[in-house]
Length: 228
Image 1 (cartoon, rainbow, N blue to C red):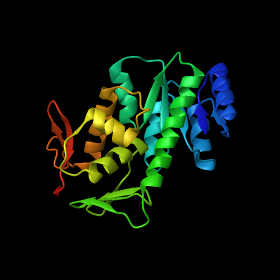
Image 2: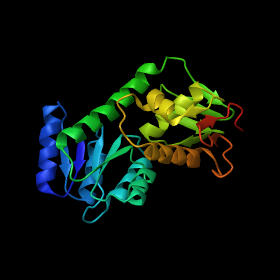
Image 3: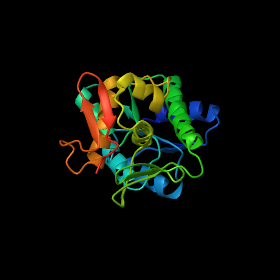
């Protein structure tokens, strides 16, 4: 587990609570130290403050997403929706707003890790999910479209796997949350919308055309089983 937080008291509180849960925890107080730890000691999850000296949390998240799908929980003092969306756009899976209770953060981390384990448990040895040229392999946690690999966050992967298991069916936001993220998910529906939008951007060359993921206004989303 990696905690990236420049406030020593906050970082120490998170470290103690996470260690009490049985996690080995590294702490970085700035962006460059975080990148070094990410290279040398890849964590199971990252708790990432957005406001950091040197290299900001958004840039760290973007760089991490170039090579890794490790769960990222964003820690932010900003409550404006557009700022939170920027963090999710950069690749964060979830967020908590400061000031927060360490127990809440630990619960969010627990949910992210449980979701990832659940994804692996659902995958059979020979199962490959497909729609058109889109391929998802739960065994290797990889996604390709027309042979091109697409790097997804754990949340995006869980959503796409759910869509591929229910092709051509309209899934409401509530149903998506239940199937992909679990009943314990307590994020907002607009957060889910952001994850779906980011997934669409990665799947479609022109997301405005929505050739793979379609929005059914007032209902939810649908993945086209005949997606090109």
